[in-house]
Image (cartoon, rainbow, N blue to C red; front, top):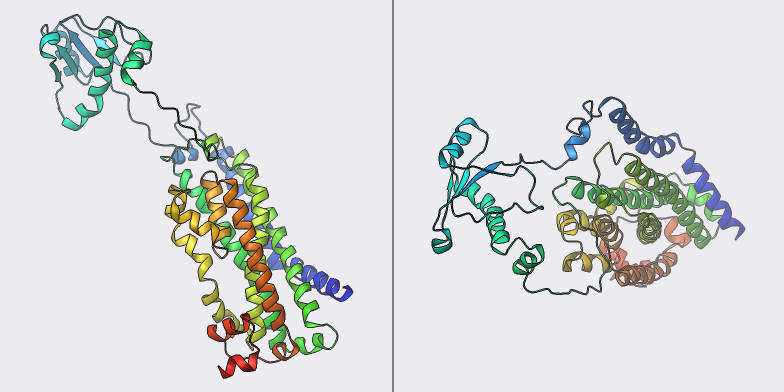
Length: 422
């Protein structure tokens, strides 16, 4: 246990005291914070009406409100409902007055309700640049106004007329906050979370591979094997480098959550698009599990390859599963509870990225989170048993050209000589 602690402490201290690690740890959250501060100080809205500033980039485009008129020759419209914006419809006494308003630009067009409306049901819509698509957008509102008046101006009766059947839906899934999908941040925030966890898990797991491969290449491993058992070395390294990755994850994700809260006004981030506070807790859980999963795989590769170059080439094969959620990112963000995201959430090798992306894009049922955690723990347990068997002096002091087939055979329990012969 003492030797394991020494390996743990050595790996942790040597990694966190590197200048490159410290610069990355600090600069990654610092640069966005400085940018947000600059936007807040110099790029804010000078007019105070919310129309300017960098944050306006993320605000959904607002369409200009139409103003239309109507000439009610049938005397149908007694009042404009309160839910219609004031000034949306202007009444005119005659067709000539309405036409003059159109020509002068006071209104975009007008509705002519003829005296025989109750018999014919026909309404004429007049404007200078008539466009059928525009008429399709504006006519339903006037239809509602007329229906409201024909029903005696009774809001309850009109509501019943509009929705004659009331269906009560009881949803057993977690309550989801309505998200404004027209806002670009509805995509970019979950996308940023997905990329963050991809980088964190892969970079932290790669530290394990680099550590083992470098020590084999520069023959430090020969010295270590004279005083430390292979299992002690494996345990100390995976825990020490795991703490390094966890420190990085806590600083980066925590800084991101704080910046989203403080920069919400600057970037016009509505509350429904803010990341929930509990994502920090789930982030720690799924980072630790994702790290243990891929770091164990990387450690196994490190025991087989003779040098760092071979190790780097081998990682391109074994990290393919963690890339799959990035390839499906559009589906996961737009439909987080569809079949494909749910399946990817339950596969241990794709679960960390998929789960965190779904949590950033919406809510995930608790049963799926628990099942994903259980499956990952079982997979990690089996991988650690297999890889710990590969941490033998014979493997650590030698090396072979990496072969995926050979690696899988050894993971399944065959010794190196038998696997090579097969």
